[in-house]
Image (tube, rainbow over all chains, first blue to last red; front, side):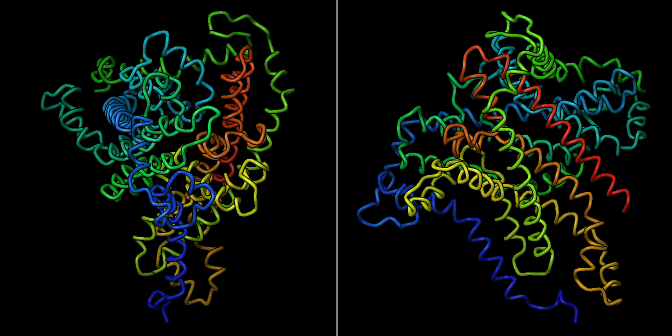
Length: 277
Length: 280
């Protein structure tokens, strides 16, 4: 009677087909990464055979061409650095702006919210110039740019969470003689952990995959993975399809590993970020 | 207590504020000012009034990008949300392996736009090769290519949000409706849809702003080819800044209009769907 009790073989089968369709683009790239570069564009849906199979040749040539491991290291450094700065500083700011109820604090808060709807292209040119002038156009400086440009959403999410923390907790700390720094780092920060995970996940997804901002700020000297992949396309020359396939696979692997390990947090984080944002 | 916290402005708020000022406030204000000037390096700006805006609107590439972006946003937002909602409905039924399916459908979302663009370039060119054409032969290929790519990327994301919304619908209410003999269609229209309205608001917001602002995928898949006909607004602005010297002011004027369009669209959409939420 109750249709939740029924087995649904057709629905299940349909979902399996859909899942295969969803995965196939990645599998096709993986398959082609083992084929010689002249056998890819014409017949991407054909399995490698004894004529077209080249083993790991595409991987070794691609890694050399774009210096993949240095790009990987740069991506890792910028992502970890930027996300740590964002979580550390915007959690403090989100708490401060929610607890201090002055005109200035709320004006500042609304400026952060406002920045969330401004597209990157609006500040693209002037931000790059500013970074050049004040010397933020290096792998350390770009972390500050990320903190600044990413602070809107993060302050907003932290602030929303702080509103749900009862003031009594902070008052109790004060009665015990603790000042605001102690109050925040010993008591509030641990309470903020769930939203801090959400903020971290959303920012990792942004910074790791970001192309244009790092390209404009540090792209001439330093390459992150997306910049390195785009670089493979080069100017007007033709693309080495073999190397491209191999590098696409290498670009995807870290994300898949990250996803499989933190899947629960990622999905919860996305839902929490969306519902509160 | 507020007074005590207030004294620690330099510790709690100042670092973020400095970074925010450097990376956002100053570039934003400078950007608005520069859109009324002619410049090549920011320091040599001379006031030209609305000249850049007039030039932007007489630029065929810009108008074409605007039209392309508008059509792309409408088509992909509708398709993404319809598919995401339908899959969410299926996955909230008791089927074997819902978690595995959810994991798979969400995964494309984590892959960056540049990588996504090249993955799909391979696939589309592979299919089109059989018809002796490539992705850049006809702007229609690029258009539908981007729509498919965007669906592949965002369906899983929106699905996750819809699933959370559907799971919040009280079971008792669904069972009561069934006992009263309501058809599935009526249950969907009268109970599920009104209750997932908040999810719809968010998903529309995310899919509209992501589609309208699309850059990386556009650059990697077609880079605007053939002859800039598949360039969206963000790419056209980039090309104006970095492709033609002497047009930096026009690029900045386009960027200001781009910002205003994003702002207006997002605010109107939020106002409409939020009102629907309250009506329910």
